[in-house]
Length: 365
Image (tube, rainbow, N blue to C red; front, side, top):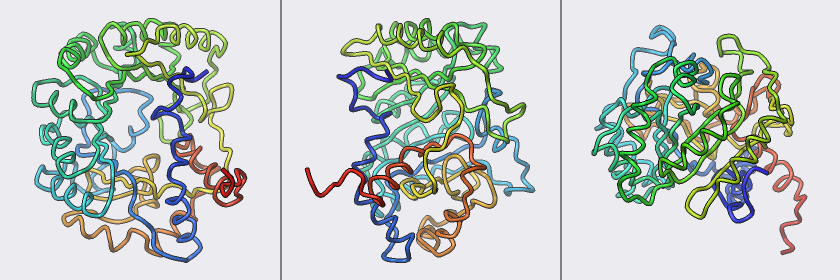
C-alpha cells in the first residue's frame, strides 16, 4: 500500500497524469511531425547552484560540482530575470512553477517572494527545500505555495549528520515548527529517501513529521544507481523490514496528516526498472537552470547532450527552440537503457498504453 483509500487522489499518484490525455495526444502528434508542441504544464526552476549540505546520494551532485568551463560561469538567477520569466510563462500558458534546486533555493533571498508573484500572475507555485533556512519572508512565500517539499531524510541528529553531511538537524526542526505555527493552506510535506543509514527509523521519522504539525510524510526508495553519483551501485536493503516500517507509518495517518510510501517507480527490490519503450513525456515539464539554460528533463540537468536551449536573458528565446526539430531529435536520441530512475516513468507508460495503443478504450465511459 502506497497510500490509504481515502487519499488515493493525491499528487504522488502518477495516475493523475491521465488528466493530461489531450496534452499527451498533442505531444505524440508533434513527435510524428504534425501540429505544434504545446507549452509545458510546469516549469521547474533552479535559481541557485549552491547548497549548504553534502548529501552523498544527491542526484544533482554532478551539477553542483560542475566546473564553469563546462557550463559557463552563471550560477545564480537575478530576481528581475525570474520575474520576467514568470511573466512569460504565465502568458504562454504554463500552469505551475516549482522552485527547486540543483542547489538549495532558499539560500537565494530572491526566491522568498517568488511564489506570491507567480500566484499573482495566475500560476500555482511549489517549493523544494532542505529546511535549513527560515524567516518570516520565506515562510510567507512557502505559505503561498500549493505544496512545499522539505527534504529531511532522518529522524535523529546523528543520522542527519551522517546522510546530510552537516550538523543542522536541530535547526531544521526549529524551522519547521516556525513554519507550521502559522496558518497555511500549503501542503507541507516531510520528505525522506530510504537509505542504508536511516531505514531503521522510518516510522520514527513519520511520527516526528506528525508531531511537527506538517501536512504529510512522503518516503520512497533512493535512486543510487545513477552513474554520475559517487560510489553508485545497486543497494541491497531489507525490503520486508522496510515495508513493515511503511505499514506502521500508515497507522499514523489522520484526516490532517497524510502518509505516502511511494514505490511504483521501482521494482520490488527497490531497484531501477523501466516499463516503457520510449521517452515521450518530457514535454509536460520544462527546466530552467541557474546557468540560464533548459535541459530535456529533471533527470538530465546540466548534461550537455540534452541541452534544449537558452532561456536567458530573454525568456522569449524559449519559443525559438521549444517544439523545434532539434527538440524532437533530442527526445528521440534518449536511450532508456542508459537512464536510471525515470521521474516520469509512469507518464511514459501511459503515453504508450493509453494514448498510442488505446488500451483503456477511452471512447467508452
